[in-house]
Length: 434
Ligand SMILES: Cc1cc2nc3c(=O)[nH]c(=O)nc-3n(C[C@H](O)[C@H](O)[C@H](O)COP(=O)(O)OP(=O)(O)OC[C@H]3O[C@@H](n4cnc5c(N)ncnc54)[C@H](O)[C@@H]3O)c2cc1C
Image (tube, rainbow, N blue to C red; front, side, top):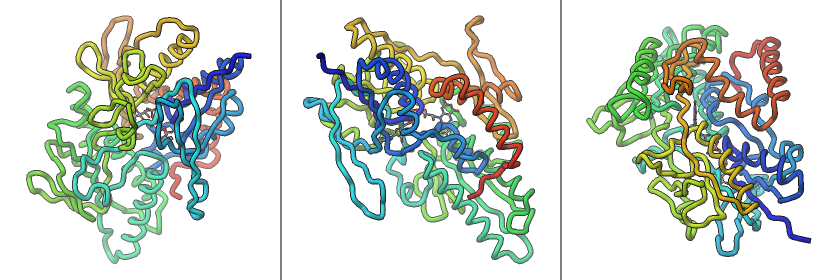
């Protein structure tokens, strides 16, 4: 009997989980190939909601998907582990697993593949600026989002326990005027609203000053000027201090120093200024990467170094014909997962592989309960149109629901919308503090 092929997807994020689910339900179910997912965590969370986790706006229990359970239902196998190395000659990957950190034991395992898909996503880029790693909080995963929320709540508790007459204003600096930084600003103001409403620790007049720092001359530099201006105006309207042309060149315990020698004091500093791929990727023998460690891929999403290794999502670098490159966005990861799926099927059938072209469907920025602003691309008129308010909010939320439909199907997604709303109604849960 012919030996089954083994296809390994490393990283069960936006792109990886969509891809492995589809591979499982086709090749895995019909026993054409063994499908394996490797992820360093045991459950999946849609990364674009991390700022809502950090601010306590959502209940993560309802939003996470257990990889073991999902794998069982979708005909693939899950390995908990962190990718350490790829041996492209022997066609193996090495992963390490550590279940109980207290034991400190790390188990290494080697897995053989015929086709490998790397979908590791990205992490925040500290650009080797002094103090960033040590003093800033990042928003790259659930652990960090929870850490940010806990630190903020601790600071509110500390400030309220010390106060005599007037609450000392809490200052938060967010470095990076991209979507992550902006959405976090608005969510934190929403948290403040609820802390005061609920009389957290007995007080209802907490104050929060948020600085949003951006090195370029406008926020959202990768989007159109009009969206950037609209969002800037909205942020100022809700009381955020937006400081553009402000490059941070040093961070200490509670202070940022800018290139113009200005010093900004902050109780909490969040770093969301650009992305890179984890450093170990560039040390893997024979895989070509760019300056931010992204794996350089061909238009078919195969790495330029090896046709049996694909890369998708934030960790892939694809230079487009027009000279631009595919941006690190959830919609790009979703589109790449779709083409990669088709290309893996074509590869097994020895057919020609498809080229991936990024289709910009527009971009929406959620400013929590205050507003949603952005633009969407309308195919029928071949134009991008600006949207805001309720319609923009519905479109923004539909991004997550579309991801859910791809991995859980229409019925489960419908049920999950009902359960989310029931949860909100029954528990009146507007703030998940702990
Ligand atoms: C707060 C925030 C808001 C955002 N908002 C938007 C938005 O509104 N619209 C938009 O288009 N994009 C948004 N993004 C960007 C979007 O989240 C990413 O572009 C998208 O998640 C990339 O998908 P991915 O599959 O490449 O990686 P990810 O979704 O990041 O998944 C990577 C997976 O790899 C796993 N992993 C990492 N390292 C290892 C390892 N060594 N071994 C094993 N597993 C590993 C991780 O656990 C994770 O499951 C936002 C990002 C953030 C942080």
